Length: 159
Length: 130
Image (cartoon, chains in turn purple, orange):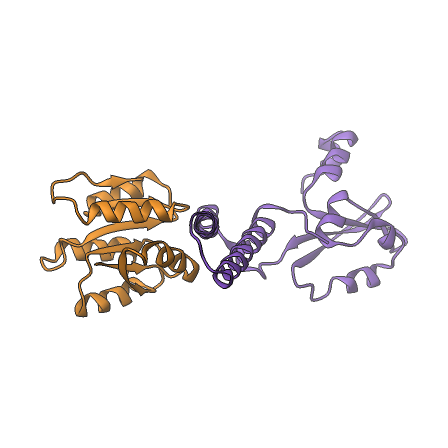
């Protein structure tokens, strides 16, 4: 297996740690959470200050049966690091498994509804009840579009 | 009034089109190409607004091809509406005999104007590609 610490200068490893879009947590030699990378909080919703010093068992328990994340443990036992955990998004949402062309089609479907409802609201004189229904459905489409963007294109989870 | 069959599996898209077209056309709807085919056996519309990607044994392209190859339906004005913007797909729609091609998102009011014009046009009039 490639030893990255020999191949890459420390500064580059730090850059990877800071900019990696995946959530990573390091377990120190004492068996506690020693560090989490910046992507961790965005992806999992757990802040670094809450997690630092937590025992590995407690930390792992936090992510048992998580609806969106699956965790992998990698044994390290080198320097000050006993293990690391990395997290990837679970395919719990159908959007996660979409190919980009299919996601583009779904985006276009939602946009077509939004375009259509907005155009009709602007150009037609509907009664109040119809306007309310159209506006409500338009907002639902915006929400569905937003969910698709969050789940498919944005790695940073909203808290 | 002329009859238009809207074929799309997305209820909100059907709703938008129904609202845009109902003043000038008699509207019927189908949620799949298979359902549209059943509808065609009983009633032949003047135009079909046909989504391309739909669940079922037939997609919009396949239904378009069947319509255009069948003597009793070939004169139906077929508008393909698709969420796929690939040029190759547009070329395929054209090759299968579709009269017009709208890419989502599209203006439902432009669709209404297109159908109003198209259902008056002569068989030699130019097709519309948007």
